[in-house]
Figure 1 (cartoon, rainbow, N blue to C red):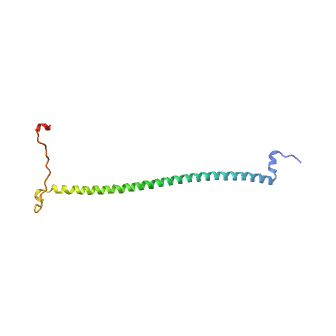
Figure 2 (tube, one colour):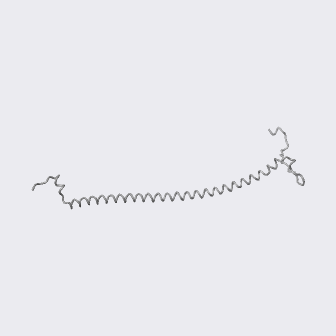
Length: 128
């Protein structure tokens, strides 16, 4: 019997040993891939939990700001209403002052008099 060269020997290996070797290699690959997948999943779960926590914080902050702005808006509306009422009250006398004296009804009512400025008696040169 003749001895085989190393290049020829590889084609005449025991098929069971060859299959076992290949299966071991494939198992190593599968285990590595599973570990990598678990690492990636753990990273995504951690990131997801962090983002959910941040979203909750931002949402709560937004609701607080909304509540504050709604209160402020209500206060400003009240102030605006008060200013409008005050403006209407101030406009009433102005409309009466714009009327000419002949338009006032003097029957049974007294005529409104305008205020007069009072100055102290003295020398006109003291004013300068």
